[in-house]
Each structure stands twice: as C-alpha cells, then as structure tokens.
Image (cartoon, rainbow, N blue to C red; front, side, top):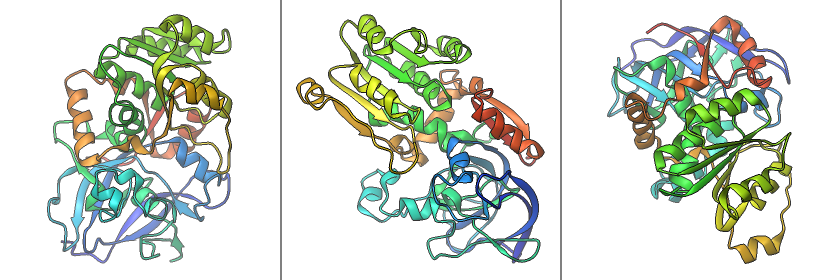
Length: 375
C-alpha cells in the first residue's frame, strides 16, 4: 500500500486545441482501492493521442494524454489482489469488468468504454493530477494518462509481463499493436491457408501483417502509398504489396487472389479506402474496420455486392482482446522471434515528444515510443 498522499511528477500537458505538448511539473495522488501507481518507463504514441490533442474526439482540456504506457508498479491500493510493487506492467484500455460485454470476454465493447477512456476523469468524475498551481488537469485517458513519469491505473487494465522482456518496448502492445494483431487473430479469425489484405501499412496495419503470418495466411497483401512502408511489409511477411497511387488496388487484389480476398483490414480511416476494401472481398469475405475518422464520418458501399456476396463488415475496437491474456501472448510471440514488432518503432526522449508527434503524422516514424523514465 502507498505511504504517501501524492507524488511529484513531470507530465506532458495539452492545454488547448491543436497545441503542442508542454512538459510541466505536477502532482498525482496516491492509489486507492483497486488502483496501482506505475512508474512509467516508456509510452507509445498513437494516432488517437493526436486526434484528441486536435479535438476530433472531445476529451476536455487541459489534459495529460498517453495510453500505451509500460512501467513498474510503485504503489498499490488496499484492494489490489494480484499485483505488487516491483511488477513490470503494460497499461491498456479501461473497462468496468461487470457489464454484459465485459463478462463475456469482450471488454473492448464495455458499456462504459467511452467515459472510462475519454471523459478526462475517473468513473466518479474526479481527476488525480494537479498542475504546479494546484489546478486540476484532466487525466485517466484510457484509464492511465501515461505521458507522465507516474500514472494511475486500475489493476484490471495493468497487465503483468515477464521481467526478462524489454519493458521500454512493450507499451504499444496496450493499444496500437494489440489493435492490429487482435483484429486478425481475435475478430476476423484469419485461418491457415487463407488470403488477407491490410489497407494501410502503418503501425496497426503492419501489426496485422505480422499477425496474419502467425495465423497461417498464405497470401498476405499490404496496400499503402509510401514505398518504404511497403518494403517493410515485405520484410515482415507480406507476399504482395500494392502502391495504390500507381495501380487500382481492387483490381490488383482480385488478380492476386483469383476473385477476391478472404479477409481485409482497413486502418486508414479514409471512407474511400474502406470502399476499396469492401470491393476487394471475395464471396463470404470479411473486412475489419479499425481506422478512426472524425466523429460523424459516413461511408458507402454497394448493398447488393454486400448481400449477394455474403460479405461482412466488422467494426473492431482494441482488437477485441482480453488484454490480460492477449498481451502476454504477444510478448511470448515476440520473445520467440515470431512477432518482431520492434521493427516498427523508434525511440524519442521525453523532451522530444512533440517531434515524435510530428514524425508520426508525417509518416516518418511508424510507431514512436517516448522514453520517460529509467527502470
């Protein structure tokens, strides 16, 4: 249990729409009940951090973002059962643990998913971080707010990982990497000998390529407009790559597969690309949608193509994973050399968090990881 009332921290704060992250001195309260306080080692930067910074999703500001944290448990609340000080953990999304969807193994579709991850406060509407002037900062972003030297999490969304795994690398397993890999393995359930296409070869799309290889797909296609990403896709297991600036991806996929692909994933958030993905499906094909455009964005498709082809369009959140099971499985696959997601990342010091965001948005870096503290 904690013996302090609060901890001094340094946090990256976004104070206004579209503004840069600013490193500030702040304080975070001690954990209570089923909470754990985690000393953050590193945090991945995800597209969702930027769209919240820019207020495509209306998380209240000023806020401490960050939702792919990894670190070491520093203190625990009185009701914590399975974690203890010194444990290595990956922080993932928040969920209530008691609604119907949580109870049936689909915590990513928790009845309280939005307020627990995007409200800017805990389930009781309270914040845990104050700035140097004692003013509250919105936090609990994805039940963690891990762009800080310490973060509060619930025990339920702090996933213990082996001490011999490279902790500073593992944070993105809590969201982006989990999303791409889980979409393939958990949601679409890509089968051995099947065909799969990833529309988008960013961190999520390439995680899906890695997972399709693990799942045994024998035709794995990556579609993107950046030649370097397509080259990396080939290195990671894609059997075919398509530059959609240079050729019609739907026609190319139909030619490669002899009529249409079994499974597809759309990770760009562009409605026209989603339409290409649907059109590239073969009979009884299924497409997962993980790309997040602005709220209210609409897309279109040919209803009769969907109907007569027996096609499925599936929305997917967080790879529909049970994090306490899936994240350790991904760690084990990585340690066996079968899921080399480290080839997607580049590290940045905490002081260069804004450069990490710029490089991510420009496509220079697929998955930035911000180093925040030492083990």
